[in-house]
Image 1 (tube, rainbow, N blue to C red):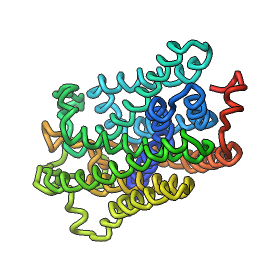
Image 2: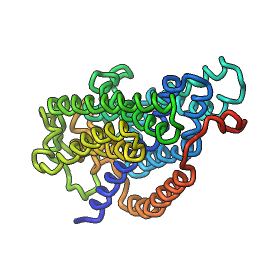
Image 3: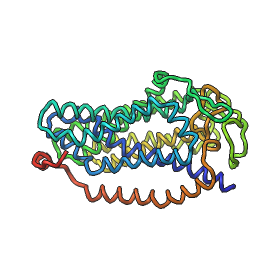
Image 4: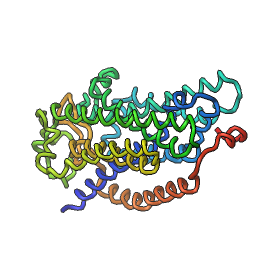
Length: 378
C-alpha cells in the first residue's frame, strides 16, 4: 500500500478520534451549562453545578483547537470550503464560545440576582447552541452541502443559513444535544453531594439518554431512506488529486452500502445503542463512572456510524456531486501528513495523560458549604 494512501487513512481516523474526543469532553461541559437553570434551583446549587466542571472546562477546549487545527493542516480544502461557505454558522459558534468563558469568570463576581441570572442564561445558551450546531453539521454532511468549485478550486456556497436548519439536521442537532445533556447530568451526579441537585441531574440524564436513543433509531431509519453519494470514478486513492477529477452520483440508500458489503460494521451503531441502554441503567443505579463511560461509548457509536456510512466522503456537494470533498482529494501533501502524524503521536498521548491526571487529582464531591464560603469559586 502506498505511503501517501496510508497517511490519508491515518488522518481520516485521527479526525474521527478528535471529533469523538470533542463531543465527549466538551459536550460534557456544555451539558452542565445547558442544565444550569433547570437542575439548579438556588444560587448555591448553580454554583455547585459550575464548580463540578471548574477544574476542567477550559482545559477541555483543547479539543476544539486540535479539531480545527487538524482540519486546517490535514484537510485544507475542507477547511477553506466549510469555514468560508458556512461563515454565519462559524460566527454563531464564535460568539457563543466567547460568551462562555465570560459567564464562568464574571457570573459570581457580583452578588446581585439580576447579574447572576443574566450570566446563567448566557451559559445555558452557550451550552445548547454549540452542541446543537455540532450535530446539525453532521446531519448536513449526510445530506450534502450546496457548494461547487470553479476551474482554480475557488469554492462557492450557494445555500443559505436557513437551508441548513432542515428537519434531518435538526434531528441530528437534538441527538447531539441530548447526549451532551446526558454527559452533563452524569458529571453532576458524580461530583455533587446527595440531595436535590443530584436527584434532578439523575432525572435529566435519564430522560436525555432515552431521547438520544429514540433519535438515534429514527435517524438510522431516516439515513436508510436518504440518497447517498457513490464515488464512481477517480484517480487512484494514493495519488494527488482534486475534486475536479472524479465522478460521483446520488443513489437511494447509498449510505448503507458499506454496511451491506461489510456486515461487521453493524457493530458500530450497535455499540451506540447498547451504550445508551447501559448508560440509562447505570444512571438509575447511581453508578456515575460507568454511566460516563457509557456516554463516551455512545458518542463513539454515533460518530463511528456516520464515518462508516460516509467513507471516503468528508463534505459531499449537493450542488454538483462530482465536486464532493473526500479524504482522497481534500488532503494535504504527503510530507505534511507525515510530519503532522509524528507530532500527533507526541501530543495526543500527552493530552490524554494530563487530562486523566487532572480528573484523578480533582476527583471527589463539590460541597455546597465550601462553594458558598469560597470567594474564589465560580
